[in-house]
Image 1: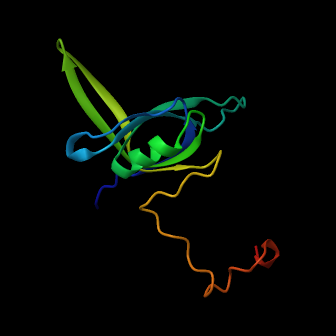
Image 2: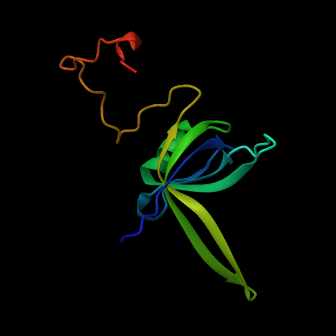
Length: 136
């Protein structure tokens, strides 16, 4: 059996992402914290987890151009842990290394260059349908 490290989160960006450009290999880096609600407890109270997210390259460029504080976003990526030691004290940092960041609310975001163009509707038999045409 093989292993899989993949995560998809939907949450609210807590502050404007911090972005650095022109790093090694001319890459971009964006960091932000994502608030993700836990399922409600039996008493109805909802708690949130605050998850650090790091995006590189095109995902970082998209984040810098389109993501603001309080934006609802979907993040796809993998969980990454790093370890460091300072004065004999070992610490662990866990964060999400995002491969994709997409906005879900607010003003429509510009389509990143890497996204495919919308399909041509000329040959699409479903392009002219309405909600009433959906059988479920």
